[in-house]
Image (cartoon, rainbow, N blue to C red; front, side, top):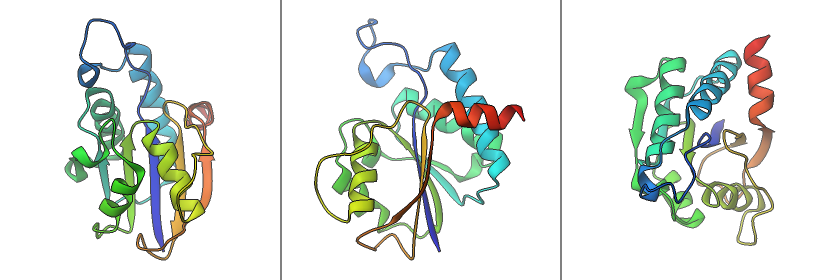
Length: 166
């Protein structure tokens, strides 16, 4: 079974705050929320093999927090393939080259929402999802080369924060 998890980065400093887009960090609130989301993910015991993140500051920090809490610091890598402005089709081609069977991607919208739609619809078309900051979608299938994967679940940040508190 192939399992792919898509996570949008946490709450970041607003655009136009005097920083280049790629340099916008998570806010302190964003960091705290990502920590709680990661604790919720940890309770699910996903058995992730690798985390691949956009190198953009807000996604990078989100992935670092998740990797630390899940004990996957050595399984964290950064790829320009999923940075801001990446195409869903480009990310799908990238996924087809990956050997992992359980992979978490940390990135940006609209790319992740478009990728989610592409992977579950099996082809092009408009995104039918809008992932909130910190949301996670889980997809399953036989392999990343399949034309269509199944949406196993889609969880909001609030759900993970509640899971982390229990």
